[in-house]
Length: 265
Image (cartoon, helix red, strand yellow):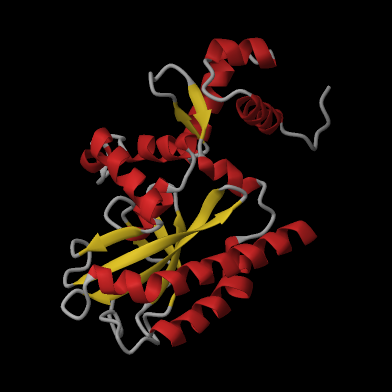
C-alpha cells in the first residue's frame, strides 16, 4: 500500500515530465512503453499538463513535447528576485543615460509580460499617468506585435520558438493569423539575429517605436530589454546608433550578474 502522504497522480505526472525531458516529441504509445503507465492515464495526465501550459502537441498532432514553461520549474531563482535585485538597478541606471522609457519583459506563455519599467519616471514617456495597466509592471503585450516579443522568439532555440508559435497558432489565439505566416516570420527572425535587435514601429502603441535586445542565460533568452521612442522625434537609424550599444551593455551586465548568482546558488 502506498504511503498515505503520497499522491500517485503527482508521481505519475512527474514521471511523464521526466520521460518527455529525456525524449522530446514522443507518442503516447512510446510514453506507455517507456513509463509503464496505462494509456488512458497518460492521456489524462497529458491533457492536464497541456492545460497548464507545460506540454504541447507536436507538429503532426499525435505526439507531445515540453514547452519552455517547464524551465521555470528548475531555475531556482524567481522572476521577482532577479528583477528586483539585479535588473532594476541596471535598468534605472540605463534610464538615466538614455532618458527614453525602458522595459524588461519576459514570456508569459502566449504573451510578453512587463517585469519592470521606467515609464513612470521617464520624462519622455507617453504612458505617464495612463489610467490603465499599460506602462506598469504586470502588463501583458502580444508577442508578434512587439519588439521584445519578436526578439525573444528570434534568439530562442528552434525547438523553443516552435513551441511558442504552436501556442500562438491555437484557434483561440489573437495572434493566430500572424503566427501562421511561417516564411515571413522565418525571414524576420533571421534579420533580427543578424542585426541583434527586434523592432516595432507604430502598431500596438501609435506614434511610437521600440527596439529590444535579448537577455540570454545558458543559451536561451530569459527576457528582453526594450526601449520606446517617439517616431516623430527620431528615426530608427538614429535610435540604433545612439542607444543600441548602451542597451546591449546593460543586457550583458544583467546576464553576467544573474549567471554569477545562479552559480552561487
